[in-house]
Length: 256
Image (tube, helix red, strand yellow):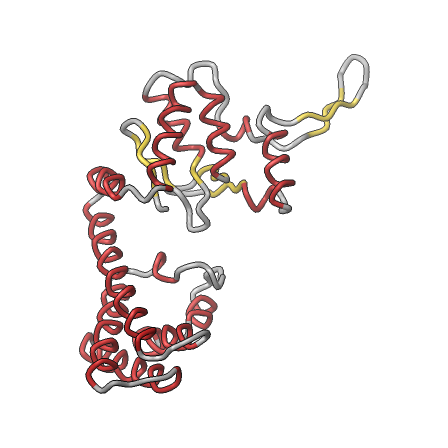
């Protein structure tokens, strides 16, 4: 899930699926729902010690959302920093777990809460028209990336289906995928992440951070590999991985 459309505003999601509370606050402001409400930094503020200037008594308190954030973190058995993050620069802000995002929307206004609930339900249900609404509000560069990413998903589905039909099992799928990456990008997923300072996680798609050229090359390599595997009836984990590397190398040479 890369973004949500709330009202007329695009609410970003980061690579880990955390939702931008900053964008939610902006969406609330645009509709007049944020008057007198705290921004995400204040609402999510962790507990701090404060000494009274008159009595000298020390009190510890956090933002109004902190107790809920702590509850979610405890339920998931993770530190709060895993489900609540702040980033700087363009596109930055406060990002949080979807349950925290819903709680913040509820705090801002009942109307915004309803809007976010509806949009999140559509996203979880796989409503493809939501992606079209997001694309309408995206920049030309973002629209181009989205088009290539969708095409890549189609190529990926065809590729994995072909592998399955030709006897690839278990870790063979990962080996074939890494063979595609080695041929087109010069290394396995882990090696590419390490070389580019990216956070490596087995369950995270490398394609979410690829540029358009790399997306095209990878998708084309998977399509060519699938055709070659079918044409020559290549079967089994290692033979299919070998064919993936050959096909990907040929595609990379054509694109140079």
